Every structure is written in C-alpha cells, then in structure tokens.
Image (tube, rainbow, N blue to C red; front, side, top):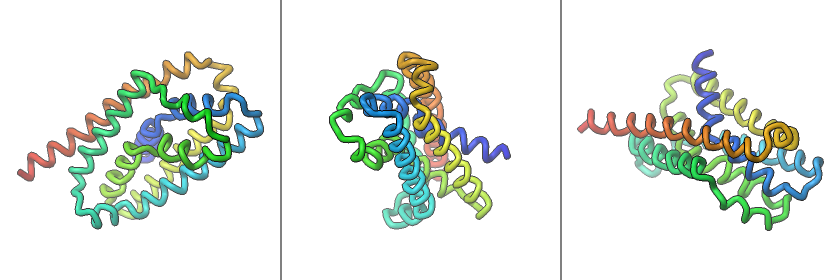
Length: 200
C-alpha cells in the first residue's frame, strides 16, 4: 500500500497538475462549461493512453538506444529540475495556446507535452526500468492511472477550483509544486550519479 501511495504521489507531482490546470483555464477562458468538461475528458483519456504506452514499451526504448538506466536518471532529473524552475518562476508560454481551437488542443499540446512532458516521460521510463516483478508493474501502472484520473477530475471541475482558490491561489500552489519537483529531481539525479561513481 505504501508503494502504491508513493508512486501515486510521485506521478501526481511529476505531471505538474496545478500548472496543467492554469494552462487549461487559460485556453478555455472563453469556452462554455460543457466544452471545458468535454475537453477535460479527452485530455485525461489521451494522457492515460500515452503513459501506458510508455510504461509497456519503455524498457525496449532503453534497449534500442543503448541508454543506461543511470544515464536516463540523470537526464530525466535534469529535465524535471528545469520544469520545477519554470513552475517557480512562472511560465508565460501558456498564453500563446489561446489562439488555437479547443478541438485541436486535447492531445497536442495539453496531453503531450504539457501534462506528459519530457520530464514525465523520463520518470516513467526510469520507473518501468526499475520494475523487478509483474506485481510492481501492475501497482505502478494502477497508481499512475489513478494519479492521471485525479488530474483529469481537477480539469473537469476547473471552474469550481478557480472559484474556490482563484487564479492567484493556483499560481501559488504551482510554485509549491515546483519546489517539491526540484527536490524529486535532485533525488533522481543523485541516485544516477551515485551509481555511476560506484561502477567507476
């Protein structure tokens, strides 16, 4: 149970849910409630499919490109740290997405790369490569799916969340998420570096 909760929390924060929510609110500013919820469902479904594909075929990606797990840990950690810095500093690129039609945004860019960005992909591949048993793989994929569903519910009820905490509140929570991600990225990189030094 602890393993499931730890994986759930890791994936939840790695997907930077409050940043995703702020982007979602920006691009659906002029949309009706029905359009927002329809888009939220499409985004959630797309993220689940993309993430499960990465989990199932992640180990083959390592084999094809000849990348070691520790090298990927360091790379994924670095990307995750960049995402964390972006959250803490505030990312203004999301404003540019408002120019697109809602129907064009579900898969790209809301699902990929905003929700499942390079850092999330890296963490998914590292997580799968660490699997020792089928049971662990099942628990991790279940925890990941649950975390995606929670993010999807946040998008589905984005209007209520915005009314409750306001845009300023979401911005503050995004910065806190960034700090947590920075710590997580440091842990991933340190593990990779430590293993490299032990082998050397």
